[in-house]
Length: 120
Image (cartoon, rainbow, N blue to C red; front, side, top):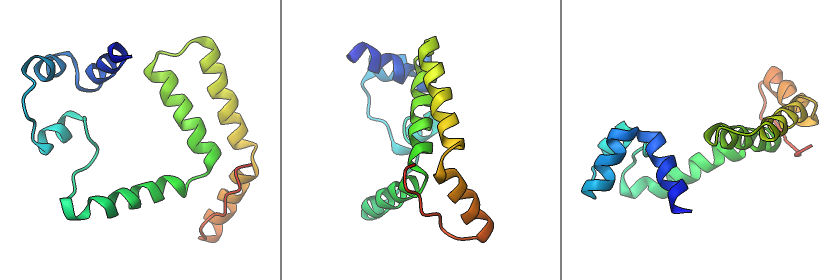
């Protein structure tokens, strides 16, 4: 809900900045939002689509099992995960290291080639 969203944003920027943002509702320049950690990068309006596609391609080029495990780990960390979430993350990480994709990633790295991940 909205309460969780406010808490998450406050955690990113800190309580003082969160108060500033919520109480003032002021316009914020991109550079300030970047310095606060609200956004990850700034690009010109003309390059935004290309930059987003480039970033998405970087993520998509990684092993799907690894991305899944990373998402779960970050989600559990952000929520100060319960024991069952921590166990799930460990299982996902173990699955990565035991996967064919992990072997393919190591092979491709050694051969200086692009890996061909198959999500298993």
